[in-house]
Amino acid sequence: MDSKFTSLPFEEAIKFFRQKVSLPTERWTDLWEGMHSRAFVVAGAMKGELLSDLRGAVDKAIAEGTTLEEFRKSFDKTVEKHGWSYKGSRGWRTATIFNTNMRTAYATGHYSQMTDKDVISERPYWQYIGGLSADPRPEHLEWNGMVLRADDPWWKTHYPPNGWGCKCKVISLSEREMERQGLKVSKAPPVEYRPWDNPHTGEEVMVPKGIDPGWAYNPGAAAWGQQLSNDAMNGWKAQGAKAWERLTPGNWETHGRPKGVPVDRPKAVIGEKLSKEDMESGIRKVLGADKKAYGFKAGDFSYDVLVNAKTLAEHIDPARSVYLPFLPETLENPFEVWLSFEKHKGTGKVVLRQRIIKAVETGKKEGLLMVTNSVNGVMEAWTVVPTTDMKYLTRQRIGKLIWSRAK
Image (cartoon, rainbow, N blue to C red):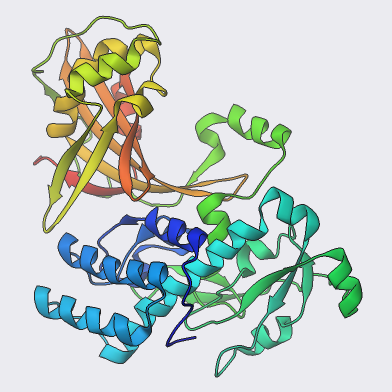
């Protein structure tokens, strides 16, 4: 498996990988568990072009089924091109990047297939297949052959891969297959935890035994979300923002930023209120196109925010349409840009959001918050929230600060 995963493209695995946003990170612990289902990272790869080239090589491996040796050739060219000095040996580093991304993509792709409504109704049982590595973990051997229902909570933390180099997998079974093989549904083993100290932060984290730190999550659920009943989903929707748990620590205080947001003299003026029907054309007029990308540069890393008139129009209250003229300057000259991973408390789905902060003078202090979501590998504008409550605007300055104007 290390040399070649498959010779056939796997649509769900490709889709999963390509919806990720590339992010620069210094250490492997910078992103934790389900955050990896939304972002492509390589520890120590801080430059955008370097990360893009590494990503391209992994994408080719997933989409075309290229081998580890072929990936290593691309890796060598990328390292030489960018003069990247990475940690660890070539063999270990390339195998880690290749195998980690391939296995999580394939595991997530299989999860997507197995949780299809028609498939799961016919094949509601999942069997853990372990002991496939050269030196398997004892717990993985104990779990080998165990059958649980697909909706068993145990899968939330133990859906493989369950660590570096883990080759375990899950297969689905029908009632007939269970009978033919003489299988019975097991009782999920109790989850025991052990303490682990994060070497970079000093924080103590409780990790399930048999699972490596940072791997106690279901990559499929983090990417796509667990299916819930309509009533359950309606209940979560009613909770609004409270249905989401923020995974990324930090705020304006921890990043040493000023408490207040300075009020800028605007270039634009308050516009006319638009109807819901006219919203898309109004945004298109402001952009000068159906969609437009606005670029940011943070050190060696640059990234874009895509504004799609159709998408944005679907998520803006017509009462807010008078603030649309301020959209370009909010994106071209923001005060701060914050990044935050957030997890839905019901489905387990993890999303990546940006909050773009700016305040303009409109006769009264007017704060502007633009929220973007990761969509198909890019950050896409989701909604704009104007507010005269500057305390509210300050409360939105949370997560990781990825761009800021000088104090």
